[in-house]
Length: 148
Image (cartoon, rainbow, N blue to C red; front, side, top):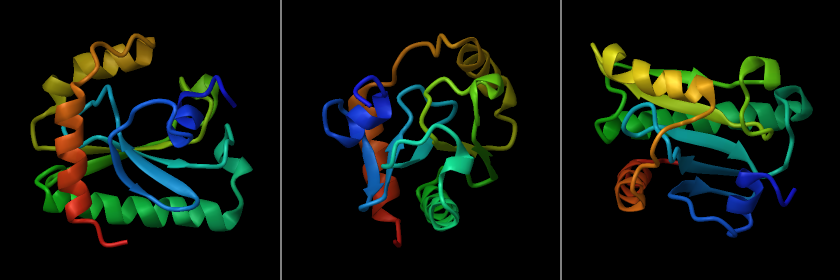
């Protein structure tokens, strides 16, 4: 799917700050993060909806997510909690038609900081991209604590 941003990232035709990848999945920093350390776990197979992944791939999606969340916490992101978010289908506000699981680290009291960014995400505008150097630093930090 040449029009899919995630497929272009997987094919190295678009830049991304990569936290982890294997033959089936890639974990990247969200370029429009709702919080510092916000990652996405993405299957390399282009499927639009979660039910299009087989049982093993869905299990692997959550297994990788668990390890990334632990690495986020060890890096100082999400020490108070994490939002796991899948927008599954257009009616659920899925803006990129390729399955991806957001891992959004949370801190106590960060709701007011997150609300404007969340409103932009819901509207489809997203706001300004985070600088690549900052995303790369976070990706390197999280990756250094990853045990996969």
